[in-house]
Image 1 (cartoon, rainbow over the protein chains, first blue to last red):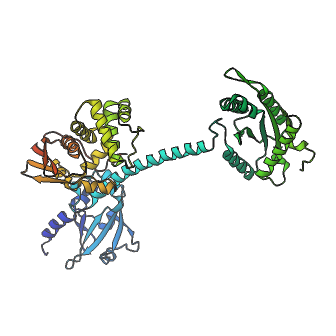
Image 2: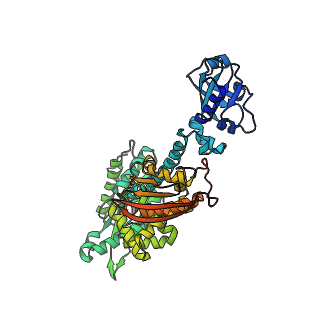
Image 3: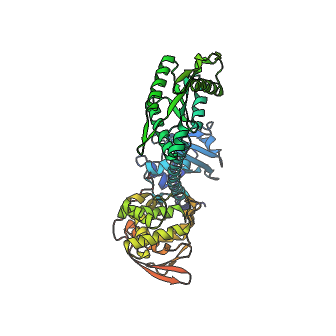
Amino acid sequence: MTDPRELVSLLETLCPMFLLVDQNGCIQQAGPTLQKLRPDLQLVGQGFLDVFELIRPRTVTTIPALMSMARAKLHLKFHDEPRTALKGLVAPLPHSGGAVINLSFGISILDAVRDYALTSADFSGTDLAIELLYLVEAKSAAMEASRSLNLRLQGAMLAAEEQAYTDTLTGLKNRRAMDHVLAHMISANSAFALMHLDLDFFKSVNDRLGHAAGDFVLQQAARIMLEETRDDDTVARVGGDEFVIVFKGLTREDTLEAIAGRLIQRLNEPMLFQNQKCSVSASIGTALSTQFQVLKAADILHAADLALYQAKRDGRSCHRLYSTLTNARP
Amino acid sequence: MHGLINRAIQSFVCATYGQPYWVRVAEAAQLGFVEFEAMLVYDDDVTARVLDALSGELNRPRAEILEDVGTYLVSHPNMEGLRRLLRFGGVSYVEFLHSLDDLADWVRLAVSDLTLPALELRELSTTEYQLFCFPGLSGYSSVMVGVLRAMADDYGALVMLSHEGQQQDSEVISIMLVESAFAEGRHFDLGARTG
């Protein structure tokens, strides 16, 4: 391989991004693809280190040092914009003292094909560049399809979770949701009031007029409770005819008395189901989070339960505060 | 059947005949849902039911519809991504034809669980070719006729295609290249990634 023209012709076919430099680092020949990257700069005649900045190894700043880097992988960048990153390999020429430096894009190929409008003709036939570009596009498309499936599955999961937190008959939260809300409020140290509401005479409606009437009463009661509370409050059906309302940030007993009064009054009004009068009433017990030194969900539920029990004993259709019970402990 | 194939049929029907038409086909095929998921796998029977329903609704033979699906896959703006992937096969139509031998491998590289039947190009002369479609996916050769026709337009080549029917276990498509640079063809820019 003594004839330099033969060598250049070989290099142009096999590695269209080669450089042939002399012992002073002056570029003697440049591959057609490499020259395409700098259409306004004649690469032949330029100093290698004037066109490229050596990023790694950093210690190499002179041509003799570069020439000694045979077989080592170089990382370079153009000095001017666009500062495309390139990989390089130095192969010293045994007799002349110069070297062949073969360059390649490596990972920068995605930007390079766009920045320099490269075509498959710019790559050697054995170069994997086209396959890499194909893979990137194909995998992006496949990833996009998977991502959109994931999003839909996530939506379905949220909907399923939402259902699991909802009492399907009334649309209110269920016991699980209430436990969740309570635990959250307690761990966040929020002040709140907890109302335990029980429908009186519900069983008799169910027995006398059937389950459809019973379901109707529960739905009407749920609607009334939602109407008499704020969006921030949690209304949950925790048993057949038992409800718990958690009032976030509300600990004024007079306000709670007023709300309980309205609930009882509205729930007392007879409901009409298929021209049949369904009459229930409501007993309510209320406890405040602020009444406990160390607050536990079970404790405040029990306290509200005690107040509710007192309301039942006092003749039903009334409201009792836990704080007014004689055996209530602070 | 891979969801991508079912999804392609759905996409073709929606783009060509409209979403309500697809809903009707999905009902006639008793899918129980309307949207195919591209990345899930369905029973083969599901695809057969969709094609039967579509054939019934359109009152056209299945092969003809599948040929249109093939054309749609390459030429519709919805499918620009797929057209680009096919164009990676070569810089000319003839190069593209030769790349079809590796099509199943290229596809598997992109989506590992999508297995397409093998294809084999036989060069009878520089202008006459035969594409052998091996078994494995019913109707694949019909889709390929549509793909080949649309890709010829894409490269600007003038070709005559005909489905030659069965030879041993393969379906054979004959391709007559009348002129390789008949028209301008559509531009393909390596760096213009879509999506």
